[in-house]
Image 1 (cartoon, rainbow, N blue to C red):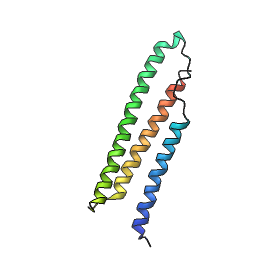
Image 2 (tube, one colour; image 1 turned 90 degrees about the horizontal axis):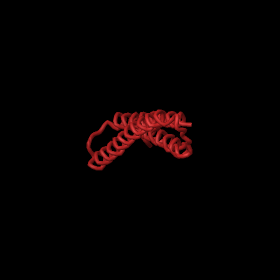
Image 3 (cartoon, rainbow, N blue to C red; image 1 turned 90 degrees about the vertical axis):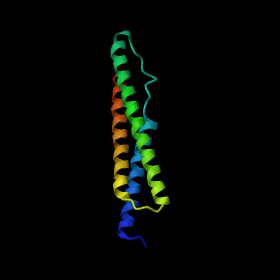
Length: 115
């Protein structure tokens, strides 16, 4: 039987996985902008929007990279059986994923403006 602290860690891991699943669904269900028709009047506005979208893409990529490195760090620590505050590390990971997901939604809002 798990100690209360171990059960808390397992529950938080499930929350992180749920957040990743939500983000994955957002990505798979979203439009990528390829079906947008841009009129000549929108060209300058569209160009600015595309620059903003690229900025969001960079931010999202950086956050996902941090999540990957954080997970690798946790795995290494657990393998080496070193002391770790797993709850603190998982909270950081969940926050990175939430930030990336929020930026992804803002990115999609910008793409909707190209219609």
